Amino acid sequence: MKDFPSPDEALKWAIKQEWSRLKKGFVLVNPVAEAGQPSMHRYIGGGYTGALTIAGCHGRMVTNRYQDEDASGAATDMLLLVGDDAGILHDWRPGKTDLAWSALPADDGKGFLIRLDSGIYLWPSDGRTPQRISDATVMSSPFLTTSNGYVAWHDGDHVTVMRLADGQRFLQLARTPAMVGGHSRQMMGALSPDATTLACCATPGEIECIDIAQADTVRRHRSDFEMITKMEWSADGRWLLALEQYGKWRLLCLDAATGECRPGWPKFADMTRTDFALDSDSKRLAILHRGHIALHDFTDMREIRRFPVDHVVRTTHIAWTGDNAISVRTDYGCLSTYVV
Image (cartoon, rainbow, N blue to C red; front, top):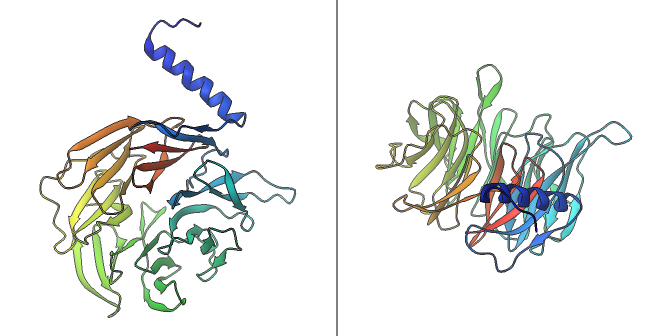
């Protein structure tokens, strides 16, 4: 038996040994994991490229693995569909130099929407050939959002809202993203739960709410925030969460009707290399920050639980993949699921 000078040293050794085995192809599956513990670890491979994709539905998860250059000199992402037993069910390699930036489950549970450099795709979860539902692009859409059978994105100069069932486009509204710091496009959007409104941020300090049926802006929320990199509505449509990059690096919670900050909202400052996700009924909010996931009761924002995320260098993306499960895709190349 190996002796250690402290429990911390023993833990570091155990994590190192676990990581060594994962890279050799071992998979950790723990069906009796308790709250805050991993129920699954699988080494996906591919170091951090800026694109960390994670989405889940009905026990299946989509993630990406960066592929090195092939014989023709092209490098791209491989999309993987992973089952609840951590086995890889299907894979898909898109076109040359395509990176997968984000994914969302389609509302019918039969597939996943993927945001690639070349456009927005629908990938059926049975492994059938993916279908591009957007026009071909030379630059990836800054956002992908879906709700109530509709999907929205930004391509070039327009915001598009489409009904998934028949491909009908209900909105194509001209919007040009502002440049932040001369290098980053400010363009972020989120569909309301009933898909009647699109919250859109094309200019730092301003979020406009667009009535999709009228194709018109019905209200604008202006404040002192800088670039918004992620937005999400609460399930009842009352609150709009927004993650600020630059400026004060905050996680904001705005009244969707007035734009006012939610009373009593914690001062989530220094939110660098972070992510957040509401569960399906907005009862719990998960926040990734500094290598930990903090779980909050969204009603009063009291912290329910906090636990560390394994096998991370600097950052990871998170997604609810079950009623009591959060999955993460780390920049170290690991796909994991934690019991919450």
